[in-house]
Amino acid sequence: QVQLVESGGGLVQPGGSLRLSCAASGSIWRIDAMGWYRRAPGNQRELVAVITSIGSTNYADSVKGRFTISRDNAKNTVYLQMNSLKPEDTAVYYCNGMIRQTPVSVRGDYWGQGTQVTVSS
Image (cartoon, rainbow, N blue to C red; front, side):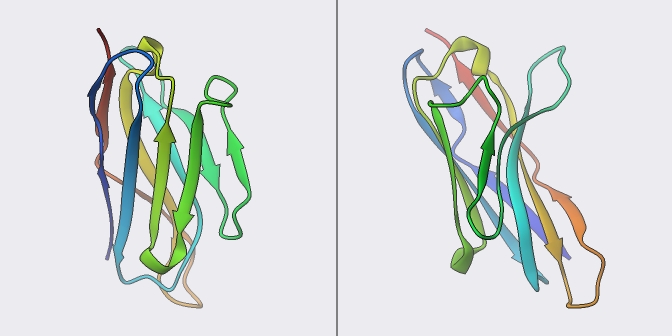
């Protein structure tokens, strides 16, 4: 099986920074795209940022210039550096990985358990 485990969430004041990490483990042959999503209370889950296996990135307009996604393929880990945080960034952040367990298996869509980010003074 495959597991994604997030860490790094917490409480931060407006204007502050946090760095989220997500490590994938288990039976993994290859990880394609990895990404971060978030769900604020009363809202639907939305894409925050995504990074492909070769490092191409895409961001939600609301976080461009403030958040940076990166990955360490040797560690099967994706990061989200969040700067200039705003109260509207408050949400549960979820890690996502598009992962193949064998060369011939169908690519699976895996999710972490989520980590809370709260931006408040």
